[in-house]
Length: 207
Image (cartoon, rainbow, N blue to C red; front, side, top):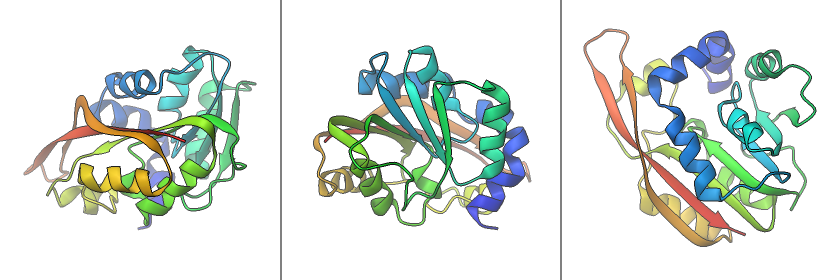
């Protein structure tokens, strides 16, 4: 099953599933890392049902929410209604449907490990930033829990922070930092025989 089919399938249950994986502390860390300011424009890439988007709304930002799953976007629209501050778009990681140099912030939360080519996705997110714009990625550190690939359609078993830092730099970003987000992602296998607790990193860079 491809990642799009997987997320189309779980879209209705995603908010409940997400709460069991990690808390709002991850979102708070991402926004504080970016230093978000009200009235600015942010892109939420791999937005899902709007976990990061919701936090940005509360901070007074306008958001372009992008996801490849029509069902996820449908759930987000049902959640937020006809909200003028959100522009929902269908798009893929390697071809984000946002103009060059048009957003102040780009966020990608638990998105990169589902992407076929992470470095290309980072390059795309850097492309859409205005000069001085900030990219923030929150994702999983390298791990060895195979059941996350088979049960949750993860393409990558987390990442080495050194690799993420190198990709950000190669995408032309400056002031690159990769640090601990202070939160773990927790999951249990369907068999009940295995459970995972994986540290989450926060990576950032400025265009």
